Length: 232
Image 1 (cartoon, helix red, strand yellow):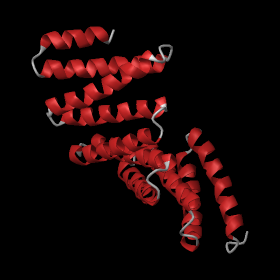
Image 2: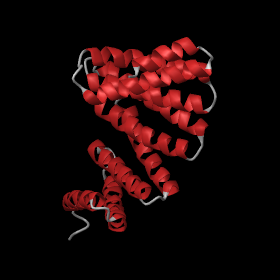
Image 3: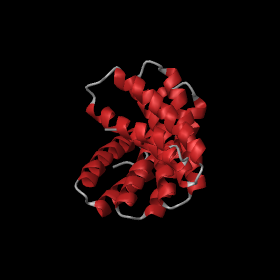
């Protein structure tokens, strides 16, 4: 091995990353973390000498994400959050360099979503809401880049639901209802065009339930009844 040969180092990192994925799937978390930590070291070193390489930067963000996934699986949530935040920072820089790139927007939304999930789990609702609103904005841009992409629109509806759930946690029922209703409208439209999609049908049911929960919280029992019936 020659650490000065950057091409060889990158190939080594890619092979190690594949090994790390296998170890993670097998639940060998200590080995997984050690492997991805070594991958991270290689990619950071190479990127320091080639800081305009966007593909390498994307691989670096992915490595941070894998480290976060591993720490999350180990229950070390603070370290997982730090890793996810590092991935989000890299992906945000990539997005700023090319806001019209669907790849960068998608990667950023995934990173922000992982950060928001851990923040919500930790009870930091203000921070989680900020992250989920970032996801919402990123997925709006992604949907505008490719307006015919049904999966992108479904992901956008999921972002509305994440925002709505945190607003409900905060007791901001009216605002939560607006977010849930936006998601429901999108999902009804998408499901009508793909009625055989069982997963979408199940998630649509949850949208009706959340709209019903808002109606119940606001004292509108008739609207809640309608929503709950539609969830069946």
